[in-house]
Every structure is written in structure tokens, then in C-alpha cells.
Image (tube, helix red, strand yellow):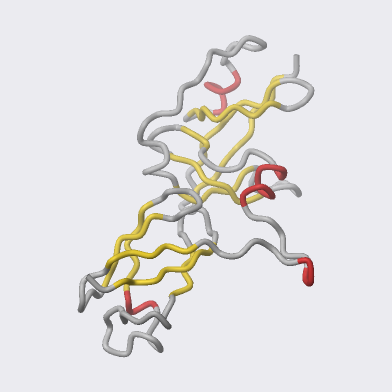
Length: 175
């Protein structure tokens, strides 16, 4: 049975390694610190890897197969040693459908969250990958001229998740 090692690379250059088994290329989510550790994992009958409880909360953007002609953006947790994002192009497409012009793509998901008056920052959970991040009102200087979030039914904020790099809409609600 084929046993290949793949690489994921974090923004700071740190690399972790994973296993791709079989002719069909089953990609396992468990990651290893070294190429050798991934290579030495038993072939054919791999153990059932269980997702660590902190994997999603600690995920970061990574490149799968850096330097290859087929590399793609995904997510992984370095401390949980777990590939949390898409493992192949099919999973990438199911997460973020392509916009084919007049045929359209799905509408952006919206997060409606109570935000205290005068808030300069808000903690948002991405509706797509569940990563939690702090977003500052100063990111939108043309809307938030005073450096705080505006409470209005007409005001929404386009947000890009730092973990999965996908877009969603945030609407702050008054308390």
C-alpha cells in the first residue's frame, strides 16, 4: 500500500508532516513534528486518530504541499498536531464554493452579536470554521470614524477570518 508523507507550512515557516495512505490517497488529519515520525507510522492499518479537543480553537492558516504545483491553503493546529481544514480540492470547494458569475455563489454567512456601546473591539466566532478572534473597530476607519463600532440596522462589516481566510458579515447589535 502506498504510504506518502505530506507537508503543511505555517506563516512563520514552521512545518509539520502528515500521512497520505493508499492508492486513493486517504489523508489523515494527525500531524507529526518530523518527516521521519510520519514515515515510520505503521503502514496499512493506521490507528484511529482522535481529534484533540483544542484543535479548532488553536488552528492557524497553513499551506498544504508548499512549493508544489498543487499546493493550497488550509488550516492546522500546531499544538494539537492536527489538520483542521480541507485535505483536498474537493473539501476546499465544499467549504468555499466558487463564484461562477451569473450562477453566483452562496451568500455570505452573517454573525449578529450584541456589542456594548463604545466598543473598540469585539470577539467574533467565524461561522465557517469556528475560530474565535478579536476584531478591532479601527479596521473599518471609514465606518467607525470614532474608533468604536456603530450600532445601526444599516451598518454591517465585512470580515475575513484570519484562520480560514473566508469572508462573513458581522452586524453589531445594541445591548
